[in-house]
Every structure is written in structure tokens, then in C-alpha cells.
Length: 360
Image (cartoon, rainbow, N blue to C red):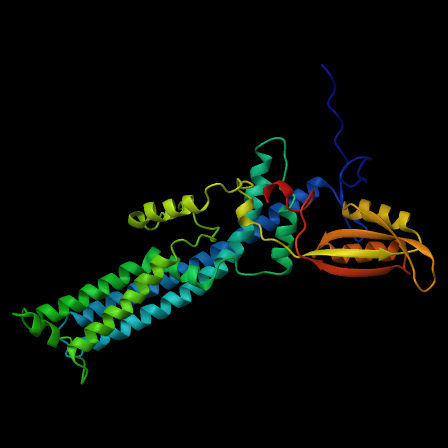
């Protein structure tokens, strides 16, 4: 029986070879990094839950308002049609408010899914191999937050989930009110005339109602193919079972012959801005070593000649992402304060450490 290893002193400096994350002179060990990520994950989960509750509150407003309007409209009130119209407009306003809140919910949910798909999920599938762009995508989502879905997708998704049924109930309430009050309509003309609102004929009111609701339903159907929302659990096109077969067939036909996806993390990544830096310095070897050590990026030396001094120099070429540029500047300044740096945007970078060339 062997003796157990002595407990590790967490306050002691990390042993040689122990990977650390260094920032402004502070070294973060793997255990500390994992602890920070867990706390960050819990914070993002809390944000997502808060906005999810706000979504439910908006839906509750719409349901309660619709119930109150139906109770009043199906009574003997003389102006109940106006109540149904105002309630329809109010429900549309609630739909817009809920879509706006849904975009904020997806903003936090997008970050949660980034951590779940490539940080926690990868731990369960040895060997642990995070996607090379995962950390950069999460960092950019923190530095430059953007809504992951458009306002049209948000409106269409919330309409298909909840509000389609509310608008259908309001439409049936309108028809039922026109038919039964004050007595069952004996003819179609009587049914149409009862839809009159003030000086507006019943035929015009019915046409306006049909057009208004048709536009809403068209919006719900046309946005069914948008699928950038990362916080939903349903399969693609699952919200419209009748239309799902057609849409999924069109989607498979459009993707026939396309390159395979990069995996579950691929759908959550956004292509970040990539930059090309040209570094002209007196000691290119030292600068290249610092860049390779601190940024883990490759450096290419190009031979150049200064046309003013006619002095031959090595020009270093480095490709980085926009979130790595501040560290590159600090690294070059520390190695050679007199270095000359030119930064240019790159249209596209293919190769190791960036988007794989084989996927194009």
C-alpha cells in the first residue's frame, strides 16, 4: 500500500509545466480558471432566467387582456366590436414587446450555449478538445454584444409559439358576436351588416380584419425558416408540423453537396474581424519570440529595404483577430518600443488557427 500524495498548497506558485493563463502579471491556474468559468456560467444562467420570466409576463398580459375583452364583447354591450379591435391592436403591441424581450433573452442564452457546447460538453467527451474559435467567440460576445437573431425572427417565433392562438380566438369571437347577437343571423347579409363600426360598413371592416390577420399569419409562416435562435429546444421547423415537411425538404435540397458542418459549436460561432499586422523593428527575432509566446500565433518574416535609409530589415507579418490586437500591440511595445506597426483588415483568413481551408 502506497502513501497518498501530500496535499497541494494552492497558495504556492504553479509548478513548472503547469499551464497558466497570464494577464497583467497575474497567473491563473486551470482550477482557478474553471472556477471563474463556473461562476460566469451561473451569472449568465441567471440573466437568461430573468428575461425568460419577462417573456412569460408579457404572454400573461396578452392572455388576461384577451379574456377580459371576450367577456365584455360577448355580453350585450353595444360597442363590443370596438373592444375587440382595440384588444387586437393591444395584443399586437404585446407581441412586439415580447419579441424585443426575446432578443435580449437570446443574447444571454447565446453565451450560455457557447459555454455548454464547447466547454462543459467537451469535458464529457475525452480527449478534451475545445473548438479553436470558441474562446474568441465568447470574448467577442462580451466585448461587442450583438443580438444573435433579427427582429423578424423574434416576432415570427413568438407569434407561432403563443400569439397565433390568441389572434385565432379573437377572430372566432368577432364571428360569433356577429352571428348570435342580438339573435342568430338569418342571412349572410345580416351577418356582414352586424360587423359595421360607426360609419364604416361591415364589408370594409371584414376586409380590414382579414388583411390585418393575413399579414400576421404570413409573417409567422415566412419566418419559419429562420433558425438562429440558440435558446430553443424544439427541432427545426417543429413549430409548424404541417409546413415542416415542405420546409425541411427545401432545406435539404439547398444543402445537397455542401460541406459537412463543423459540429454543434459551428452554429453558434460568428466570424470575427481578422487583421493583418506588419511589424518593422530593429530586433525581429525578439519580437517574433514574444508574439509566439504570448499570442500563440505564427510569425512570417519578409525581407524588405527602407527606401530612405537603404537599410535592409525583416518585416514581420502576423494575422490576428480583432480581440487579440490589443495584446499584440502591448507585446510589440514591450519587446521593441521603437517598432513601426501597420494594421490592415483581412477579408478572409483560412488555415490553422482560423477557418479551416478544407471547409471552403
